[in-house]
Length: 221
Image 1 (cartoon, rainbow, N blue to C red):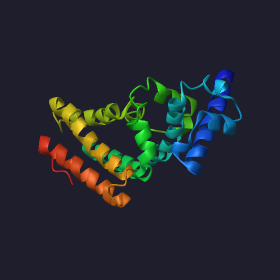
Image 2: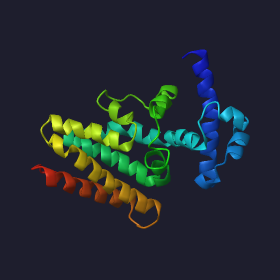
Image 3: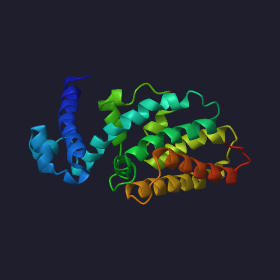
Image 4: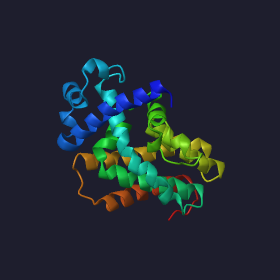
């Protein structure tokens, strides 16, 4: 890593860790530029050398919470033998971790900054590669996808290549399953359900499986 990159990583880490500290101790609502700068030990002008605005910084800070999910993926996938098994194993892992931290995951994948990320996800993992772990080449397009729609689409495509679903149905399945996930995540976040994490995961996967069954002749357990 070049000296400039090392310095950039170090400076970004100060601000990211400051936001994480505020999230853990006071919650998202307490995050302010001034408070972050005070904890990081640098003024707001320095912050803007590394982040576009506060939302941009909060996105980067939230990414650190994906580490547990990303590093858990190989365990969830070890027994997946077919593309459709792999698809639902990834979703099971993602649902389990996101339903435990709904605000974090909503911020990353559905909040106002999530649709204008440019190359921020790739930049994040280039600066903090240890957060990505050792992933197989076929998973990287999903993990580095610009938004959750791209990420889901990338793993659905493998089912097309195995003739499990039709290419013309891809976009509808993609959107319907993300509507199911977004709906459950939002209800958990807003306290509209009192499901256990396991029950919320099982319900979400069941609804997604029903969606795919309606487009195919697959027998999905």
